[in-house]
Every structure is written in structure tokens, then in C-alpha cells.
Image (cartoon, rainbow, N blue to C red; front, side, top):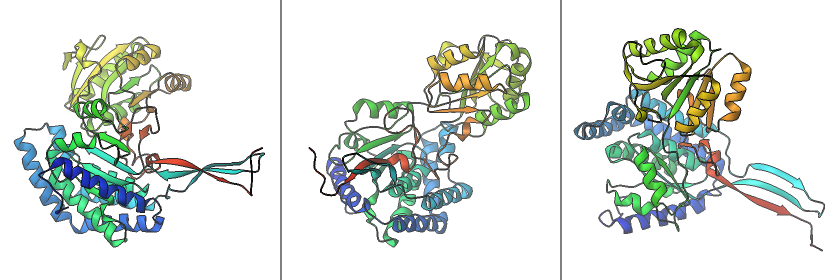
Length: 423
């Protein structure tokens, strides 16, 4: 990347787009074994370069502290030995997955004599714009490569050094496998003009994936001329039904809120059925408070010790911190109505032993992910068996939910005849 014109952002992005388009043309028919080899080699590089990656991350952490980022944002940014090993494991998991390119989605014969197959094909060039989390560099790079796509990565300013170190591992893997090194490119500048350039590169980029806060995603959706896979926020609800198992409810609610508060699957609102508000509901609020969570309590729970009164702004709020909104609802239909009014169609969960209640919750809500008796922290492509994810899409066109390698493909029709003509 050293030969790129970094001081001229339009020229920089145009050259990166040209290189990505050329790389995508080669990747479209790359052998599955070569892609798997590149990812396995990249994982090995991540392990070998752990000290280098941690040193780069320390520089980013110092920059982030100087910017006075929140504790949740700092947690997203931080890379320790365990997280770096997790990055390597994620690369290996994607490498081991079946290659989606060329997979037959459906095939049939027509009375005319035609044999038709619908097969998966790469999207082309994917642009990924993300904040804080440097592991997105490898997640996005690995999934795009697996799906036969080139990728242009624009990480957050606070994660520049970490992302550069991780992108270097991917580049080394591509070289070792004999694949075009420009298949994975990281924008080498903090200049925000690079983001605006990406959003208009219709001749070079086929789809944009923003992964970050509401401000970033709204900017992308407002200004992009390139198609977008996105979600605005992870406003995640957990509804505790009157038929909830108390121990399951306690375990799930605490994990969903406190395991990692800065991820998009973290619970942000607790809804409790009126029939169990004084017993289980009060117990859950007490457990959350004891764990250090500030409970913004609404009707039916505001009298409980340790809570603060919820305001209208707390409903539909993504805290990404040790805070949760909570209120009592009359029944499951009131919970569904609240989620429809204040949710973001990302992930919502019901805690219940009543099959009919669970079926009603699943049928009447249209979030990308719906769960029963499980922590919303499982809203993750890795936990869905995808190895990694490029993000959680909440739109309804093309991709929805965790976006893995398969979701980063389109399809084409292959039609065969035997001199067949149409009358």
C-alpha cells in the first residue's frame, strides 16, 4: 500500500477500487483450496505476530484513551492474547467451511428440454466501514475472501494500527496461496473523506456494509449511492413471560446484559409480565443491580430499591453500557407491541416454558433474530456456525441476520439445452 497516493483521497480511493475490481475478477473463479490455504496461512500469521499486533493495539488504546472513549468502546478496541487467539480460530473456522461459490441452490428440468441451475456467485467488491473493533478486519476479510469477493476495509480512526497489523496477516496469507494480494485492502488513512468517497464508488464497489454506531450507519444510508447491508442499532429486548422458569430467567438476563455490554446483542430493555412482576421481576432487578447494572425502571418496577426512574428516552435506547431499561407489561401482546414500537428488528428474546407463548412471540415479531430461553449475546455469526460475521443485517432485501460467507454471494442461472429452440 506504500505506493498509494495518501494525500489525494479521491485518487487513493480510485486506485484502491481499481485494484479491488481486478482482484475480484480473479477471485471469482479461485479454487476453494487456495482460498482455504490463504485463510489458514493468515491464522498462522496472526499467532506468529501476536506481539506485533498487541504493540499496535497498545498504540490504538493510547489514542482512544486520549479521545476519552467510553469503557464499552475501549473494550471493543482492546486485543489481549485470548482475543487474538480467537481471531486466529475464527480465520481457521471460515477456512474449514464449505465454499459457497458455485454451490447449486436449486435445479430443475423444463418441458422445453432445458436444464436450469441456480448457483451461488460472488458479489464482486465489498466495502466495509467499521468502528473500534479491529477484529472486524479479519472477520470481514475472511468472509469476503471465502465468498470470492475482494474487500476494501475502512476501520475506525482509533483502530488504525491494530487493523493494519491484522490486514497484513491476511495479505501474507493471500501471497502464500498465490491469490491477488489486493483482494484485501485497508484504507491507510484516518481522513473521513475516504468514507464519503467509498459511498459513491458505484463503478468499483458492489455493496457497502457499515458496522458501527447509529451516526455512522445513518450517514452511510443517507449518502450512499452503493447498495447497503446495515442495521442502525441493536435495541435488544428480553420479555419475561408469566410462564418463565426463574433460574433460566436469572441466568439469561444477567448474561445477556453483563457478559459484554458493548456488543450489538447485549440486552437493552427488560419487559416483565404483570403476573410475575412482584416476584421474579423484582428478583431480576435486584440481581442486575447487584451486578452493577443501572436499572432505568418504568411502571411496575420504579418502586424497587436501586433503580432510577425511566424517561421516555430510555425506551428504544441502545446503552452499550451497564444500563438497562425495564418495565412491567400486561401480557405478551403488550410486550410485542412495545418491541414493535421501540425495537430495531435486530434481536429479541422471550423467556417462557409455554410453547404457545413462544410461538406467538416468534410469529408476531419480525426481528432478524428471535430467541427463546437463550441469551441474546448469541446473536453472532460465529455462534450460528458461520465462523465469523461481517455484521447483522436488519433489512429485508438480500441478506438478513448474521452476514456470513453465504450471504456475501448472489446467484446466477446456468441453462443447458441440446440444440433447444423456442417455438
